[in-house]
Length: 71
Image 1 (cartoon, rainbow, N blue to C red):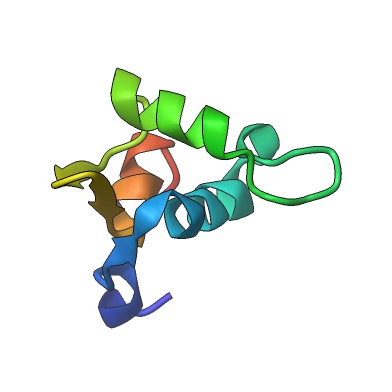
Image 2 (cartoon, rainbow, N blue to C red):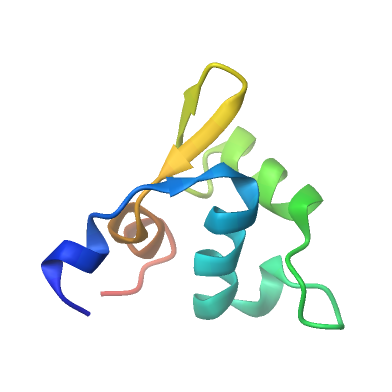
């Protein structure tokens, strides 16, 4: 993945969950869709790196990868 792709902004829990789910299936439901409840929990507890922008969460693939220990 190029540096440009790693620094793109992920807007909202769905996008963040898709990125996290592609790296670790703990953030996915059995049918493969994003489990937003688990993503919210991960963000709120600091297990997933993200920032609140008003009511919304934002992050980058680089921050998600670092928080999950993927290089």
